Image 1 (cartoon, rainbow, N blue to C red):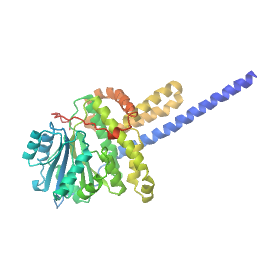
Image 2: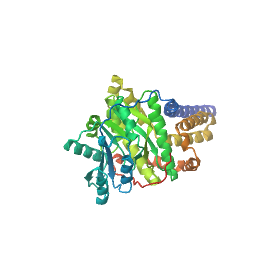
Image 3: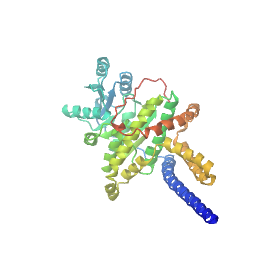
Image 4: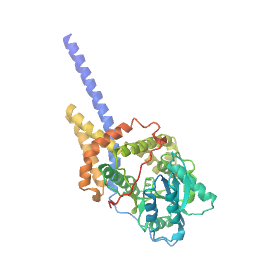
Length: 409
């Protein structure tokens, strides 16, 4: 009897051990696929560009859109920065969609020979401003070949429009420029700058090196006017860049990445701003994922692999959660079962190598080493955001911008 009880107990423990190992293997497989995906594109981001765009023999006409909600502090400098373009001034028009900004700011903009579209919405979303711009251009019978979208804090170099024009002349229809941090004045801003460049390496540069479309970033984007006008009409209030990606890729329109055309962008400085910004991003990512899954079978049937790749991207957890969970699982299994932990430590090393490849050398400095200490806290904030997804995509969260004298590049 005792022996039977012992055998039953022994078999039960073996069964529990088997289930534990099976669950561990399944979870590891998912994490391994995600990390391997990141590694492949990060590794290919180191490859030299297979082509360059020759100088265009034709100059197109552009509308430069600056949606600006309560951005009195930065919009004037951003517009002045753009007015330094080498491009012929009569071939581009700057249009500021001014919402809740002072009459003084609007007058200053008009004195700079800028068109100002006034809005007065307490809760204004970027996509509403863009739709208002299209409505204005259509009502005024203004003709443009292409559209450039910038945030109110963005500044650019004098050759910005010239290089974009070269790409359009060579047949591009949708373009993402290289967004780069213009400030690294807090630990959060440093990590946000690093995150942006990792995105550039993996989801833009690495993707285009392998023939896939670049991801969009929300600003520093350029489109053929007719394509932009058609897409912007049906976008939800939040997450316009992700929706635009979906519509472009479903039409099999390739998104080019111009890695040598810089859009300097202000990074969030405070943990609270990071927390709210990432909540909005996560919410829109999962919203677009669930909406996009319905069109996945059709995309597979048509061979639209860019679209399939995008849906897979949106299935992946953010990198900071990936890094945090793999670390926690590796530590936990080291205590429980060291043999099972070895593969997790190996995966953590692979993820570390991937991120090292994706981070440009200029960002690896004393500031980054100091900022890394904040990663555990930011991991907690991102983890908490997983419980705040509902309604996040419809919340109005304005990130306040300010002028910064620091330029990181």
